Length: 103
Image (cartoon, rainbow, N blue to C red):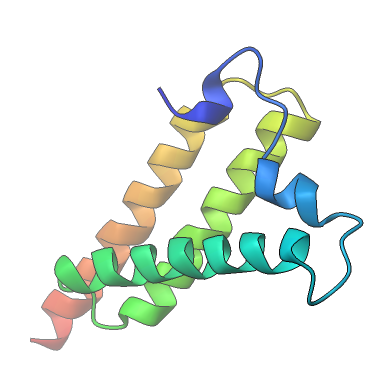
């Protein structure tokens, strides 16, 4: 179960930590490092499945991930995980179909 599907989900701890943090402080830099790691993970996974533009797909998936967490937290939308999963599948399918057409 994704964290944002839990009843007690309060949003991303890293996003909350940076809300009032000063640039250059640990409270700002640690979440930034985490975000880079997540973005790189999506790019690496996109490359691993053969996406023709893994940076683009990785960025799209990262945006979807962020939006899902925000919807779960601010809107208290506990069903957003299934919608996010379907949107991610559509993005992946579109990227792979594009790769197949180019081959």
